[in-house]
Every structure is written in structure tokens, then in C-alpha cells.
Length: 237
Image 1 (cartoon, rainbow, N blue to C red):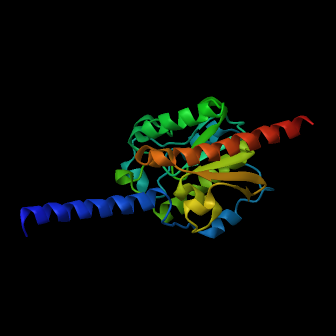
Image 2 (cartoon, rainbow, N blue to C red):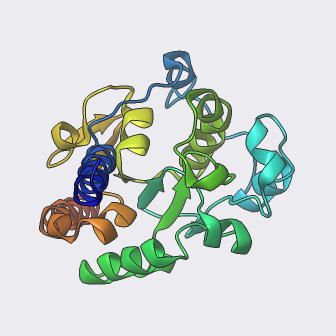
Image 3 (cartoon, rainbow, N blue to C red):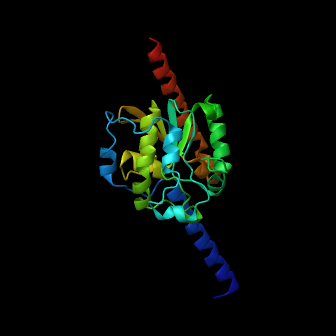
């Protein structure tokens, strides 16, 4: 093969890899966790811990799945323990693993800007992930890893008792909604989820790679804010 042919082949491979990555980032894949896990989340079940701090202390040394072997810090979650809105991502990245706090890298900085745009402070909401230890190389969490860690997130949600859950990205959405539908079919409207409202939008990390989807995300979070305002107004009646 000529040098020009080799260059063309490399270009085609690069374009194909980029297209595959985009499909993954924008929700064209699917994941599933054991549906029995969600059956263990009835509204009538009471939290087992008195505070989030007590809960974190109880689980921070977890070794139930292989992800613990490579972690620097257990990333429990952060924010208001009485928040009306919870944002859920898939798992910690490098910066989060080092600091022990979710969404503190570039994607986290973008999330902070998104929150500010709809008049939320980071301290007013709660932010967590499906898994609490960083997957190697920032790969997607395996279904078995999510099945092991998801009960921790469900307990956090039970304790905080938010009005709205916002899934950031395909993995969080498919895990909590127990569906294989792509992100494109899940976003843009509210889902009823255990007596709460759940909305899906793009993960901030995907927006860093594909900024053309920021407009769609803006529409999603405006819906979130409007529903939040409606629910708070109804409380005052």
C-alpha cells in the first residue's frame, strides 16, 4: 500500500472510531442491571441510617466489587442532605478519585455552570454516581459492578428524599429506569419514578466532546427548573 493509501486508511479508521465513540457518548448503547434491585426500593421502606455521614462511614471501605482495588478515594457524594434535586452520573473519573468528590474535573466545572444557569448552587443540590469507585481507564462500569453499588445510591436517595432526580448520561438513566432505550428516547420529558420526577439529559463529559448538544441539555435543565418551581409553589398552597 502506498503512503497515501496508508494515510487514507488511518483517516478512515480514525473517523470510524470517532463515530463509534459518539454513539456511545450520546446513548446508542445499552446496559442493564438486575431488575430485582429496583424491587428493593419501595417508598415504604425506611432509611437504615440516621445521617448520610453515618452511612458514608459504614460503607467507605467497601470491597464488594473489583473496583475497590484501584481506587484512591471512595466517592460517596456531595451536597445538601435535604436537597430537592439529585444529579446522578455514572462513576468517578481521575480527578474525582483523587479528591473523593463527584464532578470536580472539567465535566464538573461544566456541571457547575449548568446549575448556575438555572439558578442552583452546587450546595443546594446533591450529586452522586451509580458507582462510587473509579473504573480503570474511565471505562464504563460493568453491569455486575453497578448491581453491587446501586443499593448504596438507592439508600442515599431514600435518605435525602428529593422531589426530582436528574440522570446525567445514558448509563445512569438506563440503570435507574431499568431500560435499554437509548438516551435520545429517554430525554426531553419527565418519567415517574417511585413517586418522584426523573429527567434525563446528556453527561457533561459528552458535552465537552460534542458541544452541539448543549442546546438540548439547556432545554432539559430548563424543564427541570420549571418543574422544581412548580412543585415548590404547590407546597406553599
